[in-house]
Length: 344
Image 1 (tube, rainbow, N blue to C red):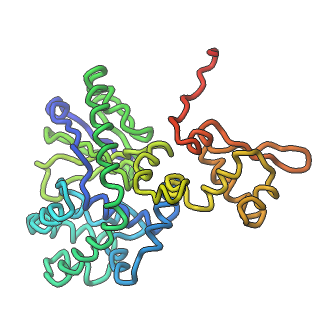
Image 2: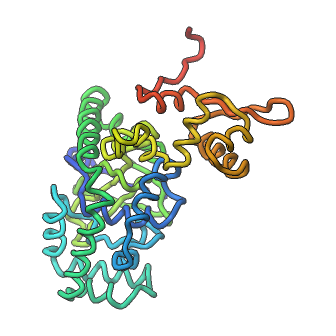
Image 3: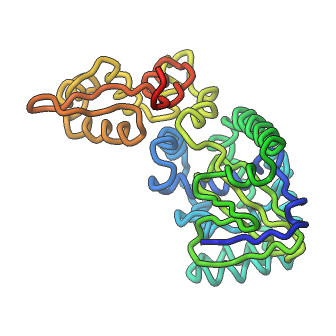
């Protein structure tokens, strides 16, 4: 657990970033594309599409940002705050040498077996810098850029909503509602961390950054020194409906009527969800989607875990039925609010 301690001055220096940084989102997404453990079904479609477009030359980026995730990501690539990838890269390469040196020390501690070229990059090698820049641009073009306009729109909505919430409930309401895993008990903000640690801000404040391509809260200190504010990345999307607002415009509709659903869930699970529009047992579901009963059962289990369908015992077999959330996703309409006990 990481406990961030605020002073009175820090509370006057809480800011919300205007938008995620395109380079940080790109680097964080590199970890997501390597593992199925993060993000679950909401990222399944994006992960499959992105993996399908990876060329062998791009796999060098996986040595830069590993499947271990944000804990091993090179921090120099996560601190820029520009509006475009080109500007963000320029800011990153222009960061003071002491920041790169500090990042190198962290790299050698966290990843003692990291490839030699990653160390040379931190030391300023121009050849590796040029190669990494080209590969990041190529990867960003199909993994992140197609979703950027929708992501910016979602961020604007998020930022406006939080500003209004802060006006109504103050900073306690703002900091206490960032994410279920972030807890605010004035003057301490606590969030999950691989180690148990305390961090005192001492007047530098904190920058809140809505982040799409990392599904967990992530706090970063600035290796340039304690005079720079802490950056707290918090997930912009928390449910399937929120992810869908970002995936939908990049889906291959209208040629593919279920393009948005495929973008969200992946092709097979989108077909599975569509097939359950008429309740069915596992054998019938397998027949409808053209898979084995075992595969159909697996996809139904994933969709059930995401709250999109229910499974009930029916005689010797089971019966799969859409939930209101699953029905709403199929019909492309607003997700129904949860039922309130005692109301009709």
